Length: 63
Image (cartoon, rainbow, N blue to C red; front, top):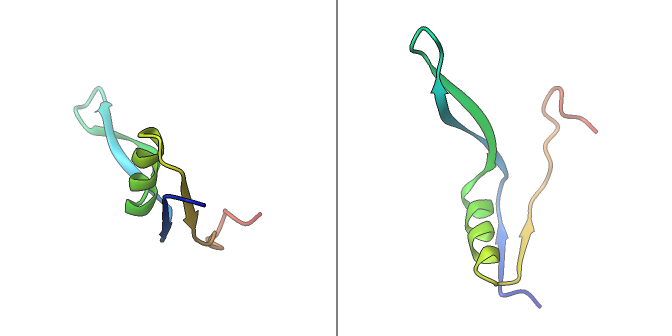
C-alpha cells in the first residue's frame, strides 16, 4: 500500500546554471513536473509513493 499516489506528467525543467563568457544564462535540464516533484519530496521524508503516467512518443525519444 502507498501513502501517496500521483497521476500526472513528467517534464524536463530547464533551470539556470551559470552564465556564458558573454553573460548569457546557461540552463541545465532536470527531471520535474509538479506530481513528480511532490512525490520526490514525500519519498525523501519517508513516505511510500507511486506515480501513474505515460511516456510520450516525442520525436527522438522513441524506445
